[in-house]
Structures are given as C-alpha cells and as structure tokens.
Image 1 (cartoon, rainbow, N blue to C red):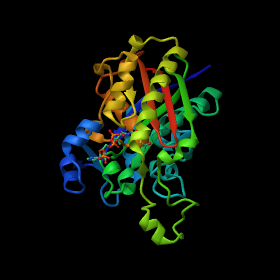
Image 2 (image 1 turned 180 degrees about the horizontal axis):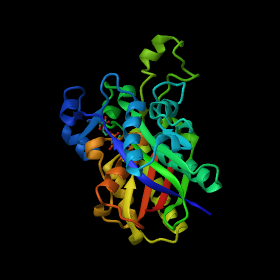
Image 3 (image 1 turned 90 degrees about the vertical axis):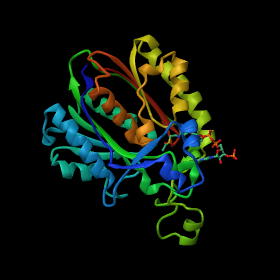
Length: 329
Ligand code: ACO
C-alpha cells in the first residue's frame, strides 16, 4: 500500500507584531505573568484587509514552489481553520481560486487546535485508499479577529498565521506512519465561540450578543490546561507504542503551541529533552490549527529534520479534540 508523504512545507505569518508590552497597555496584565504562565513573548496579527485565505495563500505558494509542482496538479485542498474568511464558502475554495488549482476539490476542517492533524488524517486516508494522489493541507487562522481584547484570560494567548504541506502518494518507506484523532463533545463549553452559527445567528437580539460578548473566543483556561496535560501524556505514549518506537527514536517532537508548560510536561513524560522539541510560541503565540504546520515548516526548513527521521506531532484543542501523528520524514 502507498504511504502519504509530506514532500514540502511552507509557512507565513503577518508582519505586525503584538508584544507583551503592547498588551500591558491594553489589559491588566504583565510581560512577567504571560511569560511565566504561557512562554509567549509576542504574536503576529493580520493587517486590515488581510484575511485567513490570504495567509493560507502565502504559505501554500511556498510549499508548492519548494515541491516544484503547479497548483493545477493538486487533487484536493484541505484548510483546517476555525476563523475562515466567511461561513460560506469554505476558505479552501477561496484558496483554490487564488491558486488556480482548477482540478482540486476543496473543503475546510474545524477541529480547533487539532485541525491540522484532523486534516492530515483525511489526507492520509484519501491517499492510502487510492482516491487522491496529491493533497495541499493548510492550517490557517486569523484568531485576532475573534479575540476579546478586553479579556485578559484569552487575549494574551492567540496569534495569526498559516502553515502548508503538500502530501503525496509514495512507494517508499518514509511518510505518515500513523495519525490518531479523538473528540469529546461533552467538554465543548471549555472552549468555544458561541455567536455566528445557528444558535446565535447575527439576527439574534444584539443586546444579548453584546452583553455576553458572544462573537468572541471564550476559554476556561485552567480546566482546559489540566485535561490537556493528562490527555497528551497518554496520547504520545500510545502513538509510540502503536509504531513500536521508543522516545529515543523520535528526532523531533512538534507539539501544538498553546502553552510552554503543557509542551514541557509532555516532553518530560516522554523523557525527551527540550533540545528535541520544536518551540516557536514565544514568537507566534497560539495560532490554533496553524501552529503545527508553522512549527513543522520552521523545523524542516531550518534543518532540524533529516530524511528518515521520526517526527512526532501532537495537538489538543476545542471540541474537545486531540490528535497525534508519527511521520518518517
Ligand atoms: N495577566 C495577569 N493575570 C491573569 C491573566 C493575564 N493575562 N489571565 C489570567 N490571570 C489571572 C487570573 O485572573 C487568576 O487570578 P486569581 O487567582 O486572582 O483568580 C490567575 O491569573 C490564575 O489564572 P489561571 O487561569 O488559573 O492561570 P493558569 O495558570 O491556568 O494559566 C492559561 C492560564 C495560560 C490560559 C492556561 O490555563 C492554559 O494555557 N490553558 C490551556 C490552553 C489550551 O491548551 N487550550 C487548548 C488549545 S486552544 C484552541 O483550541 C483554540
């Protein structure tokens, strides 16, 4: 059976930086608190008129260029996002049009911070089934557009950006070894954005929307944190066991970038030193579905991953959702 192999990566973050110092002037917070509790120093924010599909386009252009392929050779485009340009159409359709990927089907995946790995699971299944041979998978978010800039509990966490990979059918030994995705909707209240859907459509009484700030991301951070640490520990150990690997076989852990304390707890449970963990949340913050592909691109283009290395990806996010992937590069 053919494997799904990531043949190239690309990423893009907006040029505008928002530092912890800037946030000190917006809400009652401090650089010290944000650094100690999250590890985030600054994040990137979209410019006016710059939307999620624009970020996705920039990242995709790089991935296509590095793969040396044209957009019309793509069979499928998947965009993982919770902050698409519009509820209709899918952001993947905007991207398809912009790239001129005329032969590709295109759809979005909503699994919050785990979205990229849910998308990878779909790409992997399509390729292994023989239905498609070449997939563009993108994680892209403009979270700043849905961030409550009056809520210090959440506004210090999020950033904007996009990462893209080309996944292709391959006969070799390298490629996706496993992808495992999980959900538990019983915990939906821990992380959500209530407004904009059929429950609270724009036609709903605006007083309620305004009073409860329904159109902004809400998170019960501390509860989410505890479940994330517990869940990720089991997730990564299961991923290793499934592939018959030891932690020492993993060349690089590329985690979702939500909180440095969560990342180090997972690495320590695995017995992996931080020198084998990709961290960029100090510069990018939590970019939800974009975080793993941005980190993966930085690692791959920065020479931190070599051919045949085992790379372990893991994520946890709203839904709740969580997912892992083991890739032989
Ligand atoms: N600045 C200063 N103080 C703050 C800030 C802030 N920005 N935010 C909260 N505080 C205060 C709180 O009010 C609280 O004060 P109190 O003790 O007087 O009540 C205190 O700091 C501690 O707050 P906690 O929420 O308990 O802080 P915690 O150590 O849990 O850190 C954080 C909060 C960073 C949000 C952490 O809980 C976290 O990272 N959670 C998990 C996030 C995650 O993984 N989410 C899933 C992925 S995201 C996605 O899917 C889009």
